[in-house]
Image (cartoon, rainbow, N blue to C red; front, side, top):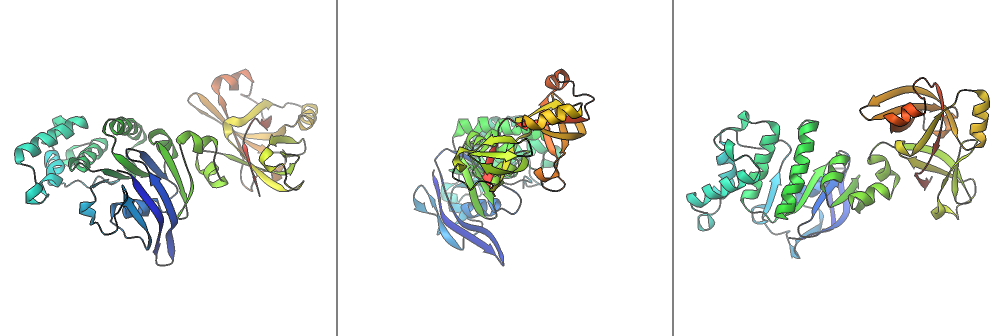
Length: 368
């Protein structure tokens, strides 16, 4: 089932939760709504489900206006962050609940319900837990049971609100892979809400970046990462360094050297106009700087000199926090973050470096 969201707005008192949001979701697609708390993603999910009513705008399921359709009739399965399992019911009865609550005319027989529930528990790889209670399950198991219960009524749309938010990092990663494999098998149109960018990029077909009730960008995981449409998207998707500079001849010039980042799209900008480069930590080249003469050469060659504040080894990677000599390159209180492999860190002899040079190998420029 396809979903069309047309110019939806929603206000709670003085707070504008959604502001003229439009989005098309193809049948069988898995879409992530990604953004910070309060950006409107859960409100949009609840409006799709019929649990909230839009102030203006419309929701269409395969071309049919869902505005007058009761949530129970929308054929939507909903999975919440905190499982919402019935504690007094066994796993089997939790999954069977939606089937047993159907109107008598469309309710399956108990034998059919039994077969359906066992098939679903087998699908989520937990058939052996049917007689247990939710309190006897791990968090990851409870969430899979919640998903099985949502699938029991054969929804045409599956909505997931922060489905893995209450779980630890290792379990979240396992369930992300599992959800992607399950979706590829079932091809149910699915929308899930998350504030975890890694989760959105790993699981979804498309990512919808939301901010302050509006959509900032829609695209494939690779597109939103490599071609962010705005400073917000760039800064929300992972760690980023924001460097101040001035535009000249299709480049951003940073510092006294200066270091340069090409930005041909801003070729017609007024010379000297302020702009910002957004540079990922792995896009910064680094080398030790051990003398005043070397520092002078660095400036002339377009390097940025700075002092190492911290060295953090995290598995195969090393992160350096560098305070540039020119404090005007960064926002107050910020430092440059440089990321490199353990091998490069050792090869460059940075173990005892107190002063280093850095320069950008890439990045994206936005006018101020």
